[in-house]
Length: 161
Length: 420
Image 1 (cartoon, chains in turn yellow, brown):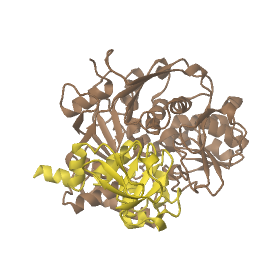
Image 2 (tube, each protein chain N blue to C red):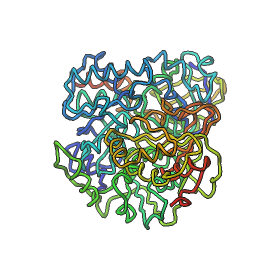
Image 3 (cartoon, rainbow over the protein chains, first blue to last red):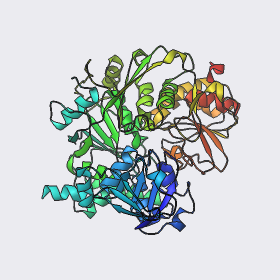
Image 4 (cartoon, rainbow over the protein chains, first blue to last red):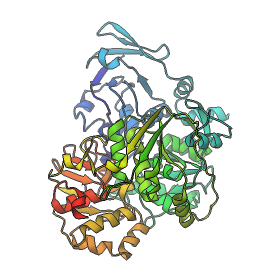
């Protein structure tokens, strides 16, 4: 279970998720301190382990910096729900074993602070606060396999064995 | 049903006769790019997983660029990790500081980009290489790690979009204005997950440098790759630049290849364009935004930091004074030397510009021209997101080198055609 942090906007980009001025490190805990800093400077003080980010179209557009996924994960976020994702961010998330959920109506049915529970396999977001279920298309099998193996490198290692 | 050039390259890389959009493939990688910000994390991951090996030390090209020369202690540590790894694995093409440059300008210039090949890099603008009828795409550090260790990566074959460019560009109008027009029409996610294939007579009149500016910004429309077919111009550039490996395969889209969307442009009516803050898709003609005061002009980056760009800017700045801070960043040491030899530095110096060493630097708000709160910069770079070049309350206006140079002289956004 986690609380929703809702950003009712499209094109939340990697410069907003983790500004390049912090890219001189790849330390996840350090990156997490600046997660979403230029968009919402209070985010890091509000976020608790297991929380969920909810946003509009094209989440994670821009740079290929995997630091964006690390900053979000490092901040304790369990998943991002968006109408759509930028390609490289989506790849990076799966390769890191981090859940990204494409939901066309999540943004309309989730308010900031709502308590959510996600069944990744069944493809259901339970909005406990609103008392509704929001269905989504589960990740494709190959992506779930990578996530379940703990990320791309673990997945490759397992396949080679 | 025929295939697009992108599908043909990916089929060949997978050892198949045919691939179709949406198909998951495991492709062989021909060239792996490695840079300072996103490379060292990949190395650490490999070491951590007991996979510290390279699939082919001659197929990896290493250059520090984003924060080179080191801007602070932490980036010096990144460079140290990069250096230690490249030396330990005896990487053949390692461009050390002094020969290092902005990767997407450096790799074609040093002969690492060949038609028909698959190039991946841990930088989103790896799509630049599509100008050479190759498949180039940006990935993250984990993908880079996997490619370094195995020489292969999974891809979903993208559906293709076709952009037909007709007409000759008017004076003072450049490929940057064309790509800003394209992105303004389709939006910053208009090509999400798609291949952007550019065709048409306008391209025949563009140099390879100008074409690279187009494919470079495919990612700004969400594209997986940008691609332009092979022609005499491509051949001539390759003849001059390829070194160790000079053979390549030319692929062309079939007449009956399938496209999910076709857009046609009359490039003869395109005006100099400016993308307003805070999205590259906010392009408007200069006539709609001229007069807006600026604090800085920035001429450089993988989009517009090549010799042709510096020549265009110098021609306008010659004998003039920049009214605002103007920073010129040749993208590679070779371009730097060429600009110096051609006397461009004299022009920039007389105009009161700063001339920097090759680096990505301020394009991403790193160093060498970072903006303060409330400042506005006209920039030849590729992104104008919130905080991109510095303070979250600063603003970036994307434009061609000509528009940036004319705006530098006036201290406000200005139509470059006034100075032709």
